[in-house]
Length: 419
Ligand code: SF4
Ligand code: ZN
Image (tube, rainbow, N blue to C red):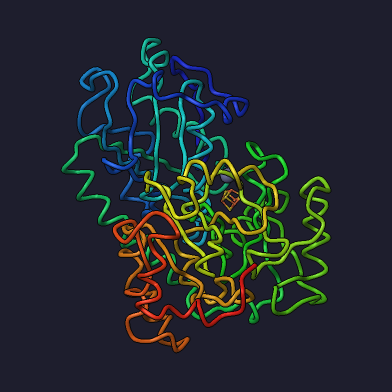
């Protein structure tokens, strides 16, 4: 069977050149996701009979029923079937949803999985762009990009709040299963890491280095995804890097990683340490799920999630922190990370690891509570380590949180000075 590709007929232009385009709030007809409403995207590999090739279904209101300036829920489901399709390809294909939508003029999209935020501009709306057209765009792009692997594509778009809430629960179970595939594989067990340069379209010098214990900062690409992507397309954005000679086992520096980084970052990053935030750390583009920053007085670090809009003890909001360390430059003391990375065995071990964690935005802290406590126990940080981490209800300046940390006898105080 060969996938037939019909020309894309939607009222906006579609071109990779629009990827960096920002749709400002005041120019937005509708925004999906963000702090108040749910938005997610989920690529499903299904059986031959469980898919209706070429079908696009919108479940819930169309754009003409969504008032101007709305914040609205959205679920994007892409079903694919193909004889050459593998479960391992799911993560990397799902990540492409971000790019494909960003290629649309007047469309803005960030993050992935259940943290998606997306805007449709007033202008796109005026030109007649609809929710269904998101499906047309995705259908076309998936067919043209992955035509050798997938034979059937179907798109479902949910805009009904109840259905979005129901479906996102199912999606989360699948995200968790995907993440579990990596459990038990450590960086030491493999001889090859992978690169990801997908984000060079918006951060031209940025490179993610993917290891089993550290996925991409977008949270959507793991080491396994990158390996599968390389298998799918050997000249694509994910290239193998044979670790080779280790230059610093504690900080995580390898000769071959440096060499790759230097060339792929257009000679802007010559040396990189994977296991520290303080000394020649990895770079961040703008897609990170959370951002870390050093708090010198507390001798520790803080992490704010993308959807946290308040102040933080670093003196900056998430957006300001993003302005500081986004864009693919090495900034010691700041790092964009995925949420999953925070509970990884390679969470800044060279800087003292989890014991450095003194403040987290509350939702992030609570969502990781069980895993954080489990890891902390292994590291002998006590049974309820999470209770010694401050959050915005404790305070949003270093002065405000210090008494709390002292009272809880936070392990960061026992570590060597961070700066
Ligand atoms: Fe790839 Fe990193 Fe961008 Fe994710 S954030 S798409 S891993 S370059
Ligand atoms: Zn990016």
